[in-house]
Each structure stands twice: as C-alpha cells, then as structure tokens.
Length: 240
Image 1 (cartoon, one colour):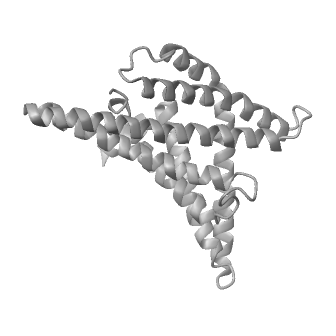
Image 2 (tube, one colour; image 1 turned 135 degrees about the horizontal axis):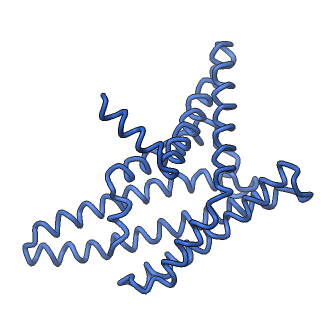
Image 3 (cartoon, helix red, strand yellow; image 1 turned 45 degrees about the horizontal axis):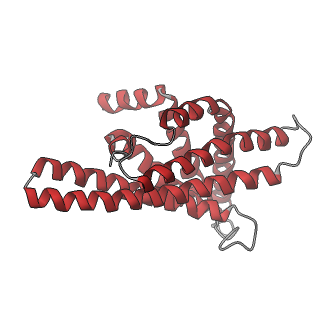
C-alpha cells in the first residue's frame, strides 16, 4: 500500500505524470457522467450526479488547456533536438517524426489563441482556431499511427533476423518494443476517434459520439499512456 502511494506521489510530482493523471480523471469522469446521464428519465439522482461529473470533467479539461500555455518552449526544445532525425535508421520513420513535430508545434499557438478568444482576452472568434487545433491534433495522431506501423514492420524484420541467429535476449527486447508500439497504435486510434467526433458536422462520424463514448475512448488512451510511463515502453519503442 505504501509503495503504491509513493509511486502515485512521484507521478504527481512530475508535470507529465500529473497531466496524465488529470487527463485520466477528466475522461473517466466524462465516461461515468455520460453513462449516468442516460438514466435521466428513470433516476433523478443519477442525472444530477452525471451532470456534476460532466461539469467536473469540463473543468479538468480547462485546467489542462491552461497548463499547456507553458508547453511551447519544451516542444520547441524537443523539435530542435530531434531536428531532421539524422540519428534515425529509417528515412520513413524520420520524415513521419519530423511532420509530427511540426503538427505538434503548430498546435500550441492555435490553442492559445482559441483559449484567449474564449476568455475574451482578444477579439477574435475562437471556433476556427479550435478547428485548427482539432485538425492538427488529428494529423499528429494519424502520423503517429503510421510511424508505429512503420516501426513495427522494421522490428519484425529484425526479429526474424535474430530468430535465425538464435539471439534470445535481443529477441525478447524486440518483442517488448513491439508491444509498446501496438499500445501506442491503440492509444492513437482511440484519440483519433474523438478528434473526428469534434470535427464539424458532416465529416465522418463528427458529433455523433455520446459523452460516455468520448469518455471511454479518452480513458482508454489515458490508461495506456500511464501504463507506458510506468513500464518505460514509450521510451524503448522509439529506437529502431
């Protein structure tokens, strides 16, 4: 019990860890709140609790938006350190990663403008800026899926090579990296489904997800992110 509490404290002490915990609470509250709200016609208490959880989820989402006001420099530092990905062995992985970094970098100023517009700090309409954010987020997620699929293909080639050469230790390491990439794909697909939902009506399934389904997709991706952070798979899966 004490070890679990200490692990949670360490997680909350880091910015990225705290953001992942807030994200998980945000989407899980939307999941439960959305599910309870569906019982509105038969249970008034469930309706009230569901409404409260949805409001709590919205406040946590707003909290994350405000905290991201300070993420530009860290993203810029990461993009600069990665550059054109000269250390990557595969050109496909390299250029997909570069495009992902561009999309992620552009996301932050667009979100800041949208937030400032909603807060009435600047006199512009926020709708188009939130749309830009959603498009950039969806683009980043789609590129992430393509990158993971490419990495999986390269890892499978290495795995066959190691199986022929009988290198058991290297094989187990590759299998672990492959599992990490599969988890990344599942996480990105779950988030991408929500990104499409938040696009303008008429685009695929935009606007058709109930609150509980949005919460389910977000909770799934958030839990995967926590698992990867705990196991270190997210760092290991990046090497090809």
